[in-house]
Amino acid sequence: MATIAVAFAGLLVGALAAYISERGIAATAAGSIGNAFNRTQATGEPSESARDKIVANIISGDLIPERLVPPATYLAPTLASTQKPKIIIIIDDMGVDRWASEQALLLPGPVTYSFLPYARNVEDTVAKARAAGGEIMLHLPMEPRGDADPGPYALKSGMTGGAFIEDLEWNLSQFTGYVGVNNHMGSKLTANVAAMKTLLAHLNHKNVFFLDSLTTGETAVREAANAIGVEVFARDVFLDDAVGDKNAIRQQLSLAERIAHETGYVVAIGHPRKETLEVLGPWLTSAPMRGFELVYASDLKTITKQPKPTALAAAPALRL
Picture 1: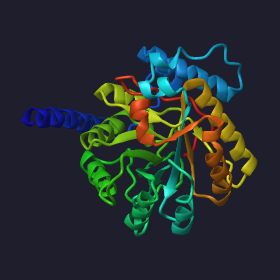
Picture 2: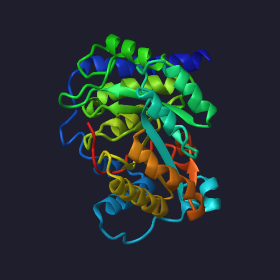
Picture 3: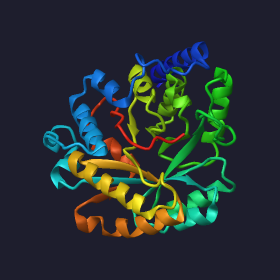
Picture 4: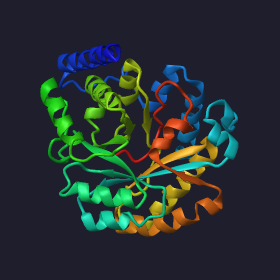
């Protein structure tokens, strides 16, 4: 135990030192960041690179020249044996609008709910989500580009190392029982390699995974994860960027279905909005009859077999 503690301390101190030395500097150089697809190619992980190519082609509307190699070569035995495409639905921004959040809890599951830590009485709504069978994540406020307000205690690239950890701990202490964290906004912070090393090392110590909401094409999450040797995941589709447009939501769900069929799984993120819930509820009800299996976000750890961090998928409609 002492050896493990010393090893982690070294990892965290190293990540924190990197952050302090590079704080305030967003890693935006094309040579060091690029886009998620190109960075994945550089890692030399063939199965995830293949998935990224297919996802990118589906999103761009190009024809898919061939499917991935058989799932057994890169997916866990559970997926290879059932042959059912997996669908992971994450509902973000939970807790702030309590009525809307409780309506979202009526969705047929499995569904993963990601709660904003600064929401009033957030523990009460989290408890209701858990009682309803939902899986819990924490929706961590992070600095965006531009003037949008991510909310109180948001992590920012200009912070000192101490202030960064202090605000991170505040967020992580607002409720318990979450299995993972994904970013709320964060297009600026997730492009900062040093800051993401510090964040990912801290979460890894708490046995909590990170899922990149992919709010920027310049995300450095994958690069940071590779540097410190931790596993990360990413969303494939935003369901409701076109707020209030039911047809657009249906189109995004169709896109999610195709990605799941072609690659074995899909990660889709939506929000507790009236139109989203009205479209998503019936779709989730009928998904098993159409041959899909609904699973939680934490199942990504078994769906993906890769011992190294999962590739960040190319995706449309980047948000803040």
